[in-house]
Length: 163
Image (tube, rainbow, N blue to C red; front, side, top):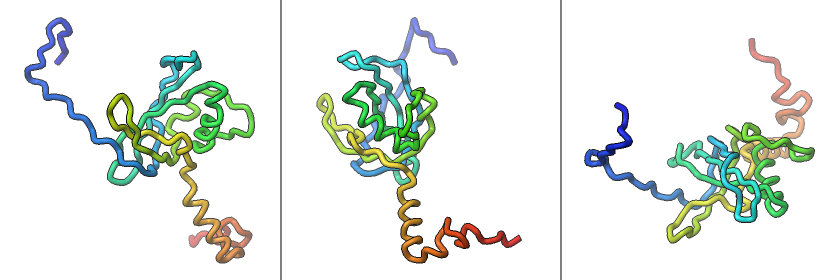
């Protein structure tokens, strides 16, 4: 069925539902889309919008939106986000939307008022690598038994496969 833009009839269309905001907290997310051709900031700095999707838990699939601002003042946050997404920021980076598209990390959300409504927004410093728990588990294994920890010579990674 095509829609006739010259004669839109909304009599059979349900009213749009609004989704409740995501509660404040830490979520594993994936970058679903990046819009690099959007508007600039009021200071004229380039700004990219991106959409994150929650990966697990009761809010799986819900969306969060954020921006990357390319200004001197925005560089520390940009570096934090890129690092959390696994981008090597120890050398110059060629920014392109596909650099961050489909990468995953943790984001911490807080509730903020915006234009008279409450919204879930990523904290300014709320981005962390997704592998943090894995790193902590490996660190604990090394502390507990350094000789048999994953990655140690002769450790569990070096065992011969059972076939």
